Amino acid sequence: MLRISLLLLLCILFCSLVVDGKGGDKDDDDKDDGGRPGGDKDDDDKDDGGRPANVNCVWNSWGRWSGCSGCGSKKQYRTRSVRVQRQGAGRPCTGAAREEQQCNLPACAVNCRWGSWSGWSACRGCGTQTQTRTRTVAVQRVGTGAACTGSDTNNRSCQGPPCVTSVDCVYEPWSEWCSCTGCGADAKQLRRRGVESPASGGGEECVGPWVDYRPCPHPVPCEVTSVDCKWSPWSDWSDCTGCDVGTQTRTRFVEVQPVGNGEGCGSKNSQSRSCQGPPCPEDCVYEPWSEWCSCIGCGVDAKQMRRRGVESVATPGGKPCNGPWIDYRSCPWEVSCDSDYLKETSSNASAAPTHGSSVVLSGVAAALVAFVVVVVAAKIRTAKQETVEAADEQELL
Image 1 (tube, rainbow, N blue to C red):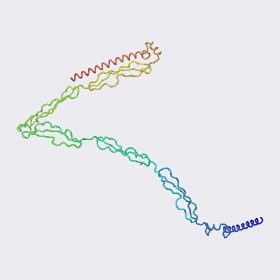
Image 2 (image 1 turned 90 degrees about the horizontal axis):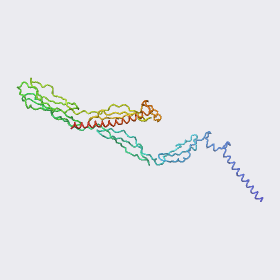
Image 3 (image 1 turned 60 degrees about the horizontal axis):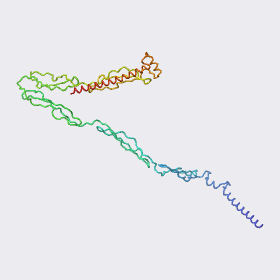
Image 4 (image 1 turned 45 degrees about the vertical axis):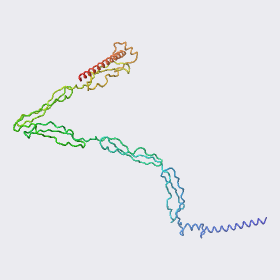
């Protein structure tokens, strides 16, 4: 047992000596020639003049890309930081500290949208035409967005200038032959015609002469020194123009012009006379309004009435009477509906007819009389109208 204890003690001493020897070597390594600690580190970080050594900048590794979510054109990014800063004349870090790239996402749904309508086109042509306006798609549909509905064209009617149809020129009929002029074989007659309707809308113009000549059918011998003017017979009387007292006219023309010292015809080539035309139409005329009748009713319902009849009915072609023939207005004085007030005023016979039950009773009586008068006037007016119509029918027969 003692022998074992001695062996253990010897082992412990030996081990402690070995450890102390290694520790002395480490201390020598950590000191420089001057005995200062960290001699090797100073040799790496500083140059011979004691300045910091050159250290290049070093990036850390890139971080993870940021997430992508949603739809459409989006970007994701990642970043990195400097792990070793540049020292001395070391190289700086190159490149960006942040990178971006496009996310691979589906397109977002966008609804189609129309642009504004253009202005209406000009109304071209004559008569009823069509104007047009258009629109284009301002935003195209994307993905599951709604499509544009409706048309890209819109029409409406417009009114152009009146259309002019092609009308050819038309001559009036030839006039009667005029009087002979000249004598012997040179005696001539002429007639004329005017334009009844000129050409329009590209129609053809009138073609041909508007004056025509022919030999005189009864020439005057040239040895005759004078011929008197001769009128043609009068034409028939024209239709009677106007109503009641109208006018008729007739005309004539010179058949033979005066020759030499012959007598002239003068200038009276037309005559007029009065004639009896159809009766002129007469409008219906109301009589003047009657006086206001007595008040009827009481309180706010008290009313007055006046009337007017027809003074003269309209004849054929005249305007009928328009407007009411009965007129109402609120009573200008107050008529109480209180029964005690009515009893009190009815006992006063000399009271003014503007108060009390006397007013009410007189108003009722006046209303009855007015009703009878209106009915009788209506019957008289109907009888007058029937009489006038019968007279008109008789006159036409």
